Amino acid sequence: MGLSENVKEGWRISAAGYSKIIQEEFKDGVNKFWAETILSKAPYDGVLKILDVGTGPGFFAILLSQAGHKVCGIDASAEMIERARENALNAQVKPELYVMDSHNPDFTDNTFDLIVSRNVVWTLTDPVKAYREWRRVLKPSGRLIVFDGNWSSNIDTRVRAQSASDREEYVKKYGEPPVSYKPDEEEKARGWKRDMPLNNEKRPDWDEKTLSSIGYRDIGSKFVLDEVFDEKRKLLNRANPMFMLWASK
Image (cartoon, rainbow, N blue to C red; front, side, top):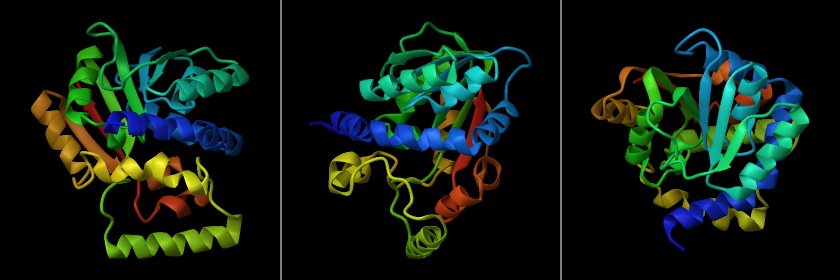
């Protein structure tokens, strides 16, 4: 299989486990942190037409639908979209959900007020193309908001040691951390990480430079550990924290 197919297979393997993880996020109430953080950067007041790229089991699509917006979620994995539909039904919301390549959103120009994604860009085989396409389907003055981290990069010794220490502390307090795939599936589920184009890029610096070169404006970023996680999840993420990146068309 090629890299794209390996990534898709990884998400197929992870669909059920990832769905359980986002169900726990709703159960624990962290969805409200995410909604507040996203909408603090909304491009306009009122009801927004939103595209959730790489929606997975539907976390952003559901919480933004609950906030009253018109949401479309896409994902390359049919299994993830199946889980997203189940979760949306249980949440009593109706985002539009489609199996679709994140690099090639099948929408006309100037369709969406806001595009959001979480833990997606690091998995893209051609992130520059994706950023261009996302800008194309944004309305003039629409906004892109990306949440991501250096998940696939060569983590330095200090970060690796901190991560191991944090995991030990997490296990003592809360038990084994959630994982979306079985231990014997790790190579198929995430072995492709080492081959991703952004594996050795410093982010979000790379993203800001790339977005600027494509024609985005009003570009900014910040780390959001304290804004989007509860104490339990902060412990798992503090060694390699998530960033929030935003830009306008």
